[in-house]
Each structure stands twice: as structure tokens, then as C-alpha cells.
Image (cartoon, rainbow, N blue to C red; front, side, top):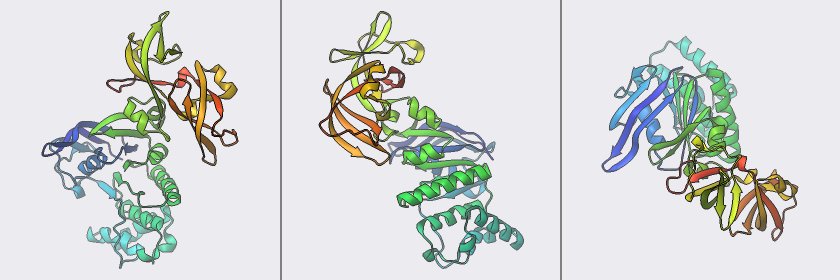
Length: 364
């Protein structure tokens, strides 16, 4: 296990900044996920750590060594790419052992490593098959096994599941999670899929425009997003947002919009500060809304008319128009009986809300 650290890392292409003086530390044995949309800089950061991308400024440290200008083979890393990149004329066994043969390892050591990787990834029965005879999930397991045999101190994953169908992604997520627990290796994983991030990560770094918007556990990222960007990106469907002002009534903060007010005495305000008239965004995740009789226990509730219902199997998603003219999405049980055209009571519990500065997007 090795610590990975980026210190003031910057990558520029002419006038375009792909990474902007980024700092990041990954503890030994940690599984970190770099999460964000296309173009946010997550793959650029991974490639810079791997040595596949030259940096404009800053340093990369792995295992206590400054490897900023070291060749990829000298960094103690192993990388799994989006493409399987298997040798089509070689068997699984030959694909797994090829890199070790090139490195000049003894035959006995090669056989031992290949057998161990095959057992870990459940490839034992496939060792004599060629890639054309394998499913997509099996090919990706071989690609993972090819780096597993190297016994690297750091594993890097560049969207390895994006080419697979939904069921295979679930299966391979489980394989990767199990593999990490078995090896205890330091791992950095790039994805735009928030489900992958939430299920795999010890910590998530949500990236935007070459910067890390928030670094934290999945629970922190989801429960207390540091910015409107994070709140809107993480969660499906996205968090509901209502624009209004922050005011003080009797010494207590109140969110006001359209003549209505939500008392925020139970909201965990950062630093306990607020200012009258400040433009803010109130955020509520669909699953945190209280519906029907339960809404009476909320800090604020109002009537909403259901515009559309999506039955998701395990639950139901309803899109509603509130009496104050806002569109809200709410999540309910599969047997809730919600129907289009119904009027329901929707409650906003202050302890589940998020507040963001309307100008900066930062969490209050």
C-alpha cells in the first residue's frame, strides 16, 4: 500500500486549464473515486498520476517518492483502462502472463501469480480460452487480472465498466469491491456514474472544471453537499431547488419565497451565520420530502398537484407543481397509490434541507 499525493498539480493546453493547481492526498489502502461529468478533469488527473500526462506545474508523489517525471513503469502503479485491450490471439493465461514474461520473471513465479489472480477473479475455468470466446464482463476481469499479477502498490481504474451493460456493471462493481477488500491496495477510480462512486468509494472527489468541488465520504457528499454543483450532480433525480431569501425572525433564520416561510431553527447552519435579504437556494432531495399525513410533522408543508408519475418498481417518483408555483420531485413507496392529477401534501423537514448562496453556490 502506498500513499498518493498531488501537490499543486496543473495541466494546461494553451489557454485551456484542464487541472487548476489541484491538491489531493489518498491514504494508503484507501479507495478514492474521482467523480464528475465529461471534461471535468478526472481522467486528466488519473493520467497525470500514472505518468501518461505531462504536468505543467506541481508534483506527484507515490509511496513517499516524487515521481512527477518518472516513467509509468517506475511508479509502482497498475492501470485498468476503459478498453479491455487484450491480445486477441492469446489465451487468457497468456494474456495474464505476457507482461511478467517481458519483465523476465521466473516461470514458477509467473505460474504462481497467474494462478492466484485467476482464483481471485474466478477465471480458473477460462484460462485456455481466447478473448473472442469470452463475455464482456469476463474480458474486463481478464484486464483487471493482467494488472493484478503485477502486485502493484497502487491500482488506477479509468472508467473500466462504461462499456458493459447494466447487469454486468453491477456484477463487476461487486468484483472490484471484493478485490479491494482482499488486497487492501490503494485504488483510484474514475467514473461519471454516481452509483459506482457511492457503492465503491471510501472517499469521493467530485470534480468540476479541473478542480475538486468536494472531497468526502459518500455519506458526506450525499447528505451535506458542499455546493449547489455537488448537490445537483449527485442524486437521481437531482435535488429540488427553490430560490428565495434568508431572513431573521425572532433571532431565528427563516427561508422566504413568495410570501411563504420555512423556519430553519433545526437546520445546521455553517458557522451559525446568516444575513437578512441574502439570496439563497433551498435544496431538498426527493426521498426526504414527507408526504400525506406525515407532512404535518415537517417544518413547512403545502399542497402539490401531481403532473407525472414514474413507477420505478421498488418505489415511485412523482413530479409535482406546488401551490407556490415550484416544480418538485418526490419519491414514495411503490404501493403509495400516487396518480397523475392527485393533490398531495408535501412537507419540508428543516433537518433534511440544504441551503446554498445563490451567487457563489456554496453551502451555508
